[in-house]
Length: 143
Image (cartoon, rainbow, N blue to C red; front, side, top):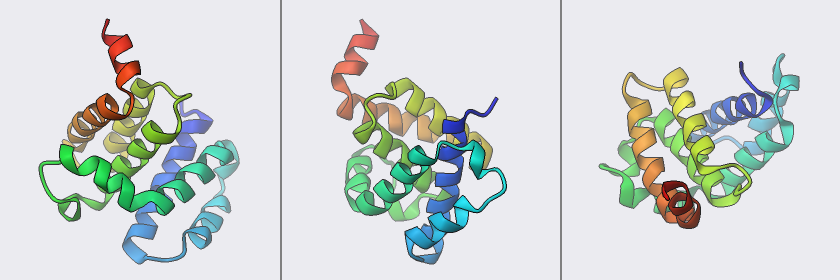
């Protein structure tokens, strides 16, 4: 079952993908997403936080991700790039969401929207990012 939070992440991914490919204003893209038929079933507050937060902090998030990538950010598939940005943003700014949930949601997005093996790559990168950004939570989970 797709929860309102998962739907918010799906809409956020679509908005970020469109933003990344077109360079259009994020508010215009977000406004268009909000008119989608099923948007009422999404967590609107999470959607807003994700799209505007990632758009505002994209360069900083890429800097967090880069040490854990096996290639330049510019060489990532656009979908994997957006999913990794979303995951890194949630790990950095939404401590109320357990890191394992953030990673699982990103993996599910990659399975739905990404390439065949993209979910494994997303999982590996975000697992290492979580160890950096949520060191105490990860350590507590491991003990």
